[in-house]
Length: 190
Image (cartoon, rainbow, N blue to C red; front, side, top):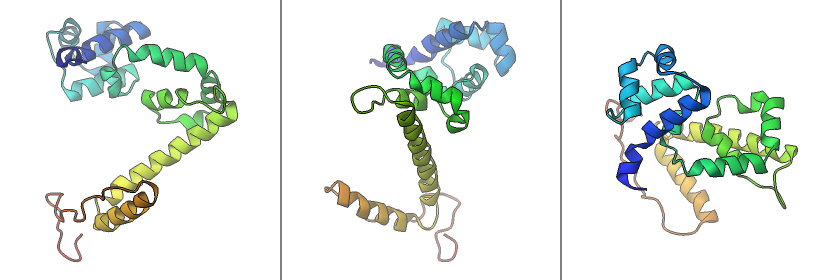
């Protein structure tokens, strides 16, 4: 995809999302606090939205901000995945607690999965959703640990385990001690 068509994605997707929900410019402005002139500018391609504006628009439309950067060609794959994995919609309706805080990309990932010989069964959908939730929690914990004084130990542990699964080049041995300005790296403070 060219740089020019990438810059049109927020415009194209804002138009698509508004049409899908039947939302007018005025209604969206009321939901988000983004003025009508700015929304029109984005829709007309005259204004390139800032990240903060996209986040406000996404919140007002009830979608993840990443939705503004979806290549329209991928939408066909989404529809196909939704049709070939109908149990996902049933699982969401029957077990909403499993899908709390999910972004549209999470649903796309789940819908694109297949079981043995075809679409996932209800049991397969629920198992995959639980695994995705567990992995997300682990990723959050890992991100937090990598911002602490234990970052070097965590990196070595991950590298050791990784090498047992995927032998190959190692990660850099040293993690710079003071990657976070404002945080002390002296003993007893990291």
